[in-house]
Image 1 (tube, rainbow, N blue to C red):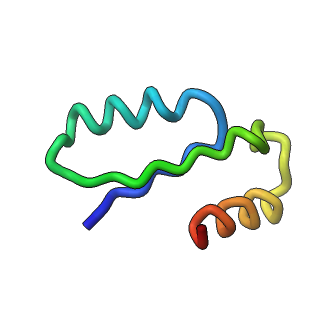
Image 2 (cartoon, one colour):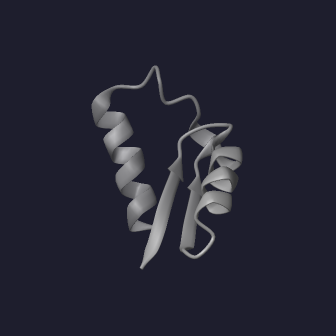
Length: 57
């Protein structure tokens, strides 16, 4: 089983590295979407669409 990490902005890669250090025995899939950052000002529908695109990718 893999652990998926979806980063909707900047800084998620450092968080991922911390998780990986704490849980080194797992496999990870990291997807960062820096092209459309920030997500905070977006509507729920837009964030859901971006997240769905990432998952389908």
